[in-house]
Length: 278
Image (cartoon, one colour):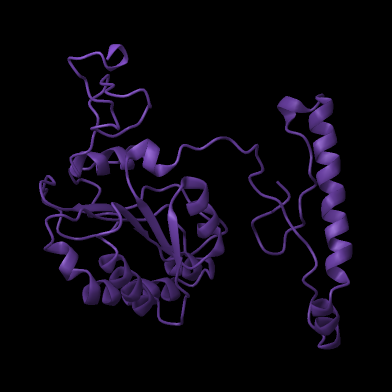
């Protein structure tokens, strides 16, 4: 990676990992990527946008950084792996790419200065789309953005706004027996210190018909810790969703050639008559 992740630090030199330090292909890749970033700097510096910024005494936007580089691997679409028609509702263009990669439809909704109202509109859109999809991902980045400012009060305001947005829009889903509601976060973002993201477990709540109830009555990192879900790992979440939507495949059961995680699979019916023989 060349991205230092922290403002004010020098960009990292692109070097082979120690495990591949003597591999000629890896050395060439690092050299080519380094040259690409240098050329990007030259071309970006010459753009009209940066010429205008220079006249306005503003710093140039003339560099790229790399992060989490890797080789593109095949990805089984959501429909084939989990048997779910899936939709993602988010604002960032990255999530459009993620949705395409995972075989999900995507609907972009812009962020405003009111994250609570943004969330309300997204949940309302999701509610109206329930007849067309089995899995709907509704995303907000407001708490993450607020925490990156390293101002705790900013994060408090973002979460309070989202609470208001949820209160306005989520009631119809709470009383719909055909809906499994899942609320969680993808990571912890500290509002102080120098870490960008941190490794503490995030809260998780599942509400739906047949979901096991526990004694937890508040939704935050501390109160949910002793709950019935325990410290669920990320790769276990989709299996739990399949479980509570009566789609979980019993381990070892294969009703079709495709290695899907859901049941029943897209299987070929058994017949008493051999069709090939007429």
